[in-house]
Amino acid sequence: MINIIIREAVLEDASDIAPLIALAMHDIIFRFIGESSETRALELLQKLVARDDNQYSYKNCWVAEIESKIVGAACIYDGAKLEILRAPVAKEIHKMFGVIFNPEDETQDGEYYIDTIAVSEYFHGQGIGTVILKSLIEEYCNNRGQTLGLLVDKENTQAKRLYLKLGFQIKGEKILTGKLMDHLQYS
Image (cartoon, rainbow, N blue to C red):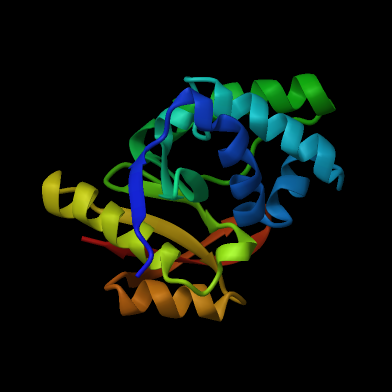
């Protein structure tokens, strides 16, 4: 049995978290920055994760560790704060890429939004994503009495199946960067 530790992230985790956020975002990060450079996208994410004022900040992340190595991460924040948390992201994207960043709202007041969740590719299939999600459900829903929300790509049937199995329910659809996604919640 693998001993997986789930904990809140700290600043020193930023360089490990950024690639996991990039992995979770897939092509969405390229739509955000207007180019397909993985190096530049990772540079942006590393800057944002290391800050304390935006949606991708380490302060909004939880990490999964195995033997002191970060193998997974989830970025989660209060949906009511999306506009405030998104502003520094928009500013940094404009500064680095000259792009006006103004995507559709992916969350709203009344839910804590799981913006990204990812497990290192080497550790796929070992149940780490499930452990992360169960920990978030325990912390946010059971301990804090909050609702969790997330978007899942309609084509990502494996992830959607996992969310539904854990008790998330489909609440509708949302568009993010022009892509139709399912909106799920857990209460």
